[in-house]
Length: 197
Image (cartoon, rainbow, N blue to C red; front, side, top):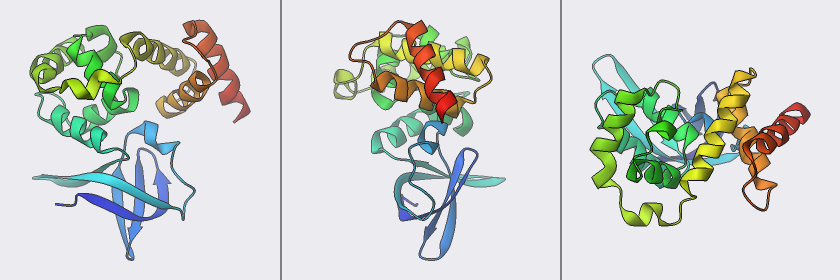
C-alpha cells in the first residue's frame, strides 16, 4: 500500500499528474480541481494516495488533503460509484461541503456532479449519512454556498469551459467577495477572470 508520495512534479496531464520519487515516475489520477493549485513542473508536491488493484487495472489516486482521501474511500464503498465518479464528486465538492450535502440529504446538490444521477445520489446519502462525523461538517460552508458554486460551475461549463477551468474561475471569483454574491454576479466575475487568464 502506498500511503503518500512526496517528490517532484514531473508532468501535468488531463486529470492526472506524474510525480518523480527517487527517479521513479508515479502516474497519479487526481480531482480536476487539484490541477490548478499545483506548483510548476519541477516543484515539490506531496499527495495522500490510494492504490486500487482490480483484475485488469492498477491505478493510483492522489489528494492534497487527507480528508479528501477519506471521502474518496467512503464513496468507493457506495454501490454504483467507481473511482471516476468519486473523483468527479471531489472535483465539485470540498470534504466539508460534501459532508454537509450528505447529512442534509441534499439530492439536487449531488446530482449536479457529472455522471451522478438521482439513484446514485440517493445511494450516497443512504449509505454514507451515518458515517459522516459531526466534526467533519461543523466548519463547512453552508449548503447555500455549495449550491451557489455548483450552479456557477454548471453555467460556465454550458458556455464551453472545462470542469477544471470553471471550478478554478468560480473559486478565484468567490475569493473576491466579502459576502456571498448572487449567482449571476459570481458567474460574471468568474468569466472576467477566465478571459484574462
